[in-house]
Image 1 (cartoon, rainbow, N blue to C red):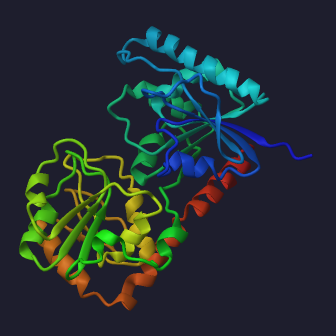
Image 2: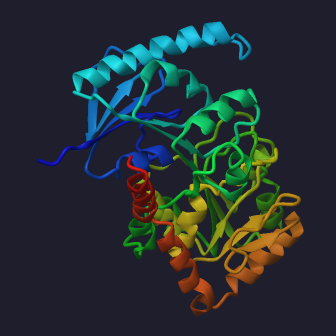
Image 3: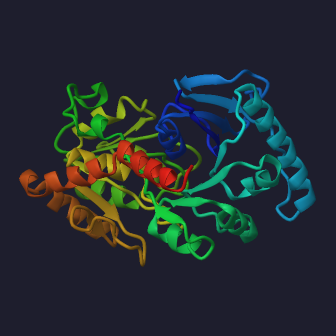
Length: 362
């Protein structure tokens, strides 16, 4: 009889239709049973029964965690004691006895004394340097293995623990590498080449490269696919341009059809520097199509994939590189981009994670 491995995954994001990194990896833990605990949010009761989202994955809602000052250690410890008790009761209902605890956020360090897991994984995919450093330092030091989503995070955490592995974000490669069968209805009448972006449009996003290029080339169509939130600087000016289309949020299954219609895939910078160096999911999605990619680099940013991504340092250069990308010979570099996308497939990322967990007995 095969005994399934048992994992308690505590995610700082919810289980959603557009899968997070934690979802992608948790759903691919083979020969295992996974209890996935997501944070509380309004309208979602923690008393609801677990929801089976995959044959081996059950999702539970955690109780609400009230806002507590970061320096209130006793209050934080008491609050997380309640979270741990809820997790423990759910685990016992599933017959969990010696599970591995998979953590994703530094504050989850408060779970360690309460749950006493057989093993501890810390999957770090964000820069948490704005939080008390002791949280992440203690969590990283206690972990049996750390998975870091970028070289920058790996360098920051490696002094805490020698057992650390680089596991970048990934992509659903089959979805984005296949030829599109149908052009989305809201792009069928697009005149000229289509240059597109996929991602959230919020106040932290720098839209100046798109505005500059759209004004320089009224014959191009710019398609921005993603939810708009907050007062994003420059958005009102883009809305007035006839060659810019704000297409809004699209379901994950629809996004590949939009990207397939793009002649050039656009990446846009954040206004505030992101020191994590974690590549967003869309870069791997773009690579999987083989299409040209143009990005605006932040000062001192290390270029990722410089052989297949056009990296600009100003809106004017961004526009010039878009021109060059449109003239690119598809046979020149498209296969290399697809190879990078294939190497980043979530199935491959998960196999590497399982290989490492198997090597250390988890």
